[in-house]
Length: 194
Image 1 (cartoon, one colour):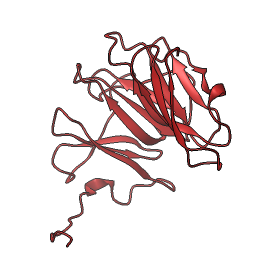
Image 2: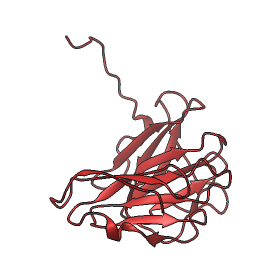
Image 3: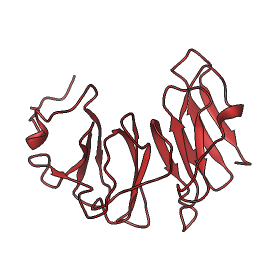
């Protein structure tokens, strides 16, 4: 039997915010602190420290890039609690990074419409990143310089499918989950030579 229990609305001041289709595309719990993060299309990332009663805009510090995408993933740095990466679709940049726990964000290069981002946490400098392209065949983007520049390394992946779920093991070894969009083959693919 299903467990009994009541649901309560935790939207707080996010309710009725002007947005677009797919408005709240991501909610994530930061693993090292009492912080929920929600992505609101056209309105950026919002954080709640009281279980969703109230939400405050993130990325409002001086010089912060403005995030307007529909957030799709957040990768939290296991060694640096102030650092994480956001990926998202449509409306703007595809990957952003914060090193001050969401006070400011930096847009990373020119990639756009990314379903997921993965970071090489075996490297203290966090130089290798992978970003999966959204609903696009053979679109898997690699950065070897911490997100400054990107190149598409998806040519050898199956056509007619999208490979959107990358996992960086180290600077040369990656896994990527493929399937769903376009009718091509599903599967997990691995490279050991980047």
